[in-house]
Length: 349
Image: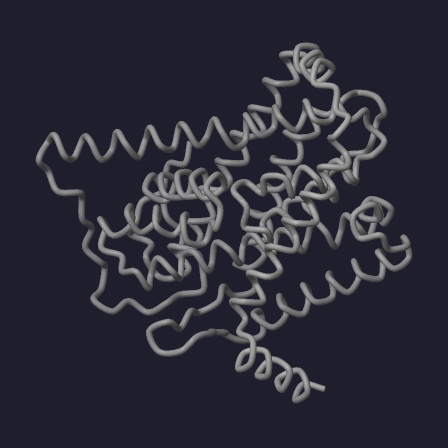
């Protein structure tokens, strides 16, 4: 079976190319989302959307903003964790926080997060002595944290609420539950694999030592908090009627986010929204669109403006002061990669 899968993979790699397949998949997701949005929004009453926006209580908007802030605060630990995983624990939390916040804020809005967010990370970390390869490793570990969190949320969420994913995947609840069990089994197998012995992937200078078992659990917890905060922000912006459980919304939100990520569209624009509209069909369309617009304002546009302001002010400061960007010396010339998070007294408040 394994040999057959490898043969298929070699065929696609040599005859088609995985990059072309990825582009085709992205275009397909965007095209389907565009068709869905056209059919769902062609009779949208804009006046009712405006009325729904005005009717949204300020306390709900404020609560959503706080949850968004919590989500971006959690994102800073993606970089903080990754830096310690690759053995660069001398980089302080404030630099990890700057990189994590600005790279995700820019990447979320421009799209192709791996490249746009990676470029922002390199601009920040190169000033502290990190190479392009080390920045690429940080992006990989941060991405792994994101996907582990997604797998955990979807596995547990669909296991308890198998009906939640049905409007998106069109599968019967029993098959969704089986899928959830398979996801959790794969996740448990991965945790057991990295727990049993040191693991690494890649070759030569691109080799990355994966976080060990306990550190992988920390990864999952970081991902859970990130997704939980974001889903809570969306939950606060939904209409009160009809009422749906938070677990249901969490499954829908994460599924829509993953589809948006797969499309590589800026902020999952159109794809995320189409998935939410399809999955939350029981809500009044105009009310739901109003909630989605507020979420985009709070989670995408506001952090994007703040991130650009911070990055611009940072560049201007160093240009006007005629000072080079700060450098940090490595603790050792060739520090080995480490899979554990080393304790460090860092003020994260």
